[in-house]
Length: 218
Ligand SMILES: C[S@@+](CC[C@H](N)C(=O)[O-])C[C@H]1O[C@@H](n2cnc3c(N)ncnc32)[C@H](O)[C@@H]1O
Image (tube, rainbow, N blue to C red; front, side, top):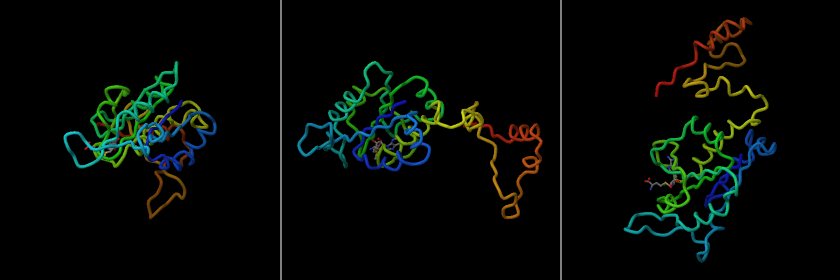
């Protein structure tokens, strides 16, 4: 699966791409993450990509043309591509969306807004879906794009060494939150691990896990 991220701050992704499981997935070629500097797609003087708002307003707006140019030049021919604009809108990201992205698309292009946002004509021309990661305002779409890339990548076959990692995870099998987890030592601050988990009785352990997962009711 290929992710292409359009941003004016490419350096924000340096650690994201080179750490832990994301790094391994890139090395194994399970996923590809390309970071594109929006300034490389502008025809304006001094690589300008933002301007003041028509009608007045406090901050700058990212101009439409450089983003449209970027999307058009990044889109892979003959591949199923989905273009996402990050926005504090009301179409919220969740596990189900991540699964659909993984199942339906070869390439996901993510457009990171900044300042006061993005010229509306980007939405009208190259965007398939506008996505928010929550009911709050971030300074830019970069963190939101990392959330989407990270969650979606975990769905891709080969991301984990073992295929069954996702089996009992929160949100995967129906709307459940995973049962509580414990590791060594057996006692911490006088709190013991539930006895059943150290009983060696696999039937009982499975039963405990089943009854201790939490129904998600949101
Ligand atoms: C400071 S925000 C713009 C906020 C905008 N003026 C408003 O009031 O809705 C700059 C950029 O951050 C990104 N962003 C902010 N909050 C977000 C969220 N909750 N989910 C996804 N992206 C977000 C978007 O790309 C947005 O264009």
